[in-house]
Length: 520
Image (cartoon, rainbow, N blue to C red; front, side, top):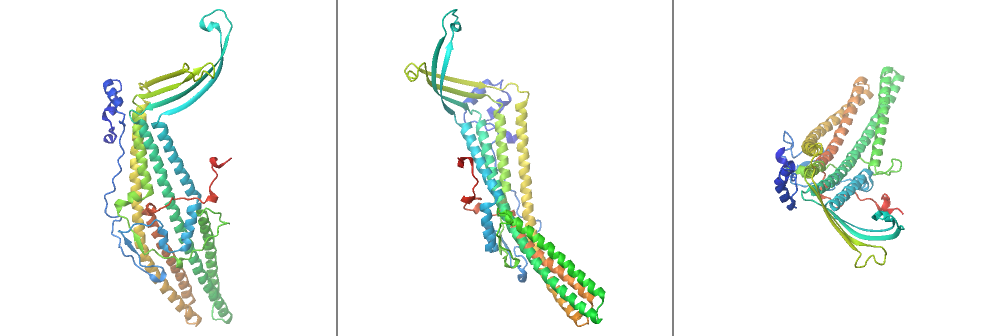
């Protein structure tokens, strides 16, 4: 890692390690005001990989049109739209996300954090790179005794002293430590900016997947309700057959027990549906009891037919978490320069100009002018090894940031690969689940008709009912998974935030938080 930390001014870097032996070189460096010690930031290279998955994923996915399995294809040439959720063609979903982007408190907090980081960077820029200028004035009433001047007698002298001055203080950034500190502050602002984009992406993806989960739960509830009604009807039929002696009590108790089990499933689904809608209310920044949310129906959602698939080398420029990790490298890289500059002389200049007089009338007279100019140099000689340790610590922090960036990139590629594989598997599973559900329903209908005519076995009907219930739920799950994993792929690819025209968060005027500057 040593080669990464060659300073921009190699002479200054050498002097930083030998400050006392190279006085002439020190004087040369003092004249190089553009010199900035420490390493210059270099953007990490994009991974040199051609594909996301070990096995190629088909660009044309399997279809099952009768159950929402629309033809779906991957398009490597297309860019991800900013409002990628609009591809589901659901006005209710669009309206929900639009409301959330104006009211979600987590997104609002990320936006405020970004503004704070930007102002901190502005403050660092102004305080570290520019001189500080101040205007001062004072009035003093004093008494001086003769003994002050070595006299043994005399009356005390009482007088007023008035003073005005303009002072200038400036720390020369000879070795670029201040500039490196400003670079670090600006990189910190970049980090919070990408964290805001990450919060934006997470919020929109969570709303989409939660809406899909609600739609799936609603479909499961309706399906389970139909099965429950069918089971109750069959229980009524068995009860009548028991009265005439053509059915046993074992058959009746088994069927009643099965219907009761389905009723419990209905209650659990209804509970989970309530939890899901409560979560949606919170996402849009409202209380569950006050939110007026649209209901989502799985049959009314449309599967995005064309999915833009970014090339692997573009992923590192699109994912907010990767961009934030890159900005963190930039920040820690600059701090190495700050720690290096702290080893070198600190040069300061100050000056003041003003006037001083015994009366206010004479304060601005020709004989009242005063001025001063001062310069100072401080060279650290012995700090108990603290400054060198701080530099080594800064280098280690930089190395940790590099490894953290690599881990973030690997995780991003894993998420894209998982989403692609899930989409391909979902498409095949949906087609198989659709066929299984259709065959199970047909088989159940045949057995129920035979049982009603007295030519079938109740045990066979009971087994068929359970099989159909399982295949129906599996079909809904796979259908919802295909919708959700499509959203997961959009999120894993970055979500298209770079194509957005407006800010990530735009608070409604009536709901902005009162700030100190707004209070009276």
